[in-house]
Image (cartoon, rainbow, N blue to C red; front, side):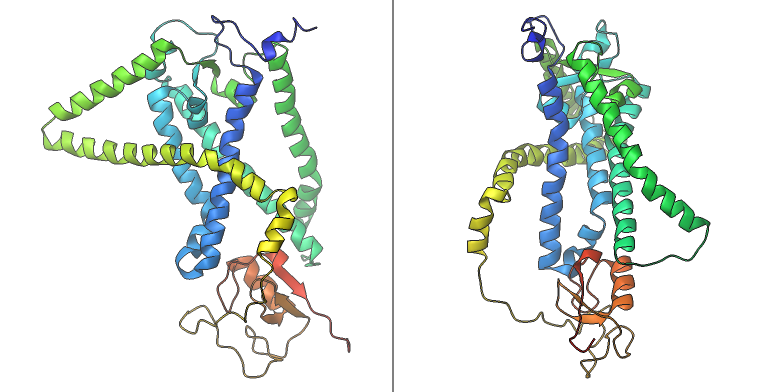
Length: 359
């Protein structure tokens, strides 16, 4: 049994096949970076909604665009994604370890390159958007917002009922592929690699030398070019390369802080956090009269700031403390993701219904 499972943790010198721990670690790297950056964007948006509110509302799109530039740079230069290169891995054509394409600096064929880029960027983006859509639908059910009877409502109900099974099948597909990889029955640990027509292997000394040689030759070629067209192309490539290099350097440094963030927000550290945050209740937030989207507060406290009528089903926003009609607050937060008065980032789960003793 020990001999049969020895390849899980060790590999011979001639074996280029990475272990299951290496491939799982590189998969987990980008999935750990995203929440950290999202948390930073949320803090910025809460501290200054006017300046950073757009960053929070369009975080998924901005992150995917930056991820696209980063992955394109590394696929072109090292035949690997950012996380794969971080763990000294590269992509090669399935079943082909011979010839010039085996060197990381040679890159991937066009078809494999764009399929790899598609599965690295687009699939995670679509998955996150679908998960947010499902969460929004479930919140609408939780808050008893009934849709009118229609074909859309039937699709809505069927989608909510089918999604858990579709997601389970998707995750089971990946798990079964990883088990086959562990047992040596598959060349790749992820079905997405199979659809891209590539597999992962370790970088060799020849790969590292080829990458360094290509970087040196590119620098020499740029210095020898003097025409206007060459200078323009060099400036564009330099700008894109600088962005990708900045992202890769920032992410490489940020990875070492993820463990600290994980410890800080762990359950064992909650008591420490509570003791540090045990401060007096702050005063009500200041009303931003200069904001075009912030309505002036009515003089009567029983009037909703949105519809200017006597409030029905009083509902407070936990992010700001202001009270509105339930329906007014629900639809405003659903479409704008912020408090109507203060502009603080707000989600549907921040709606708190108020019940008076008379009611």
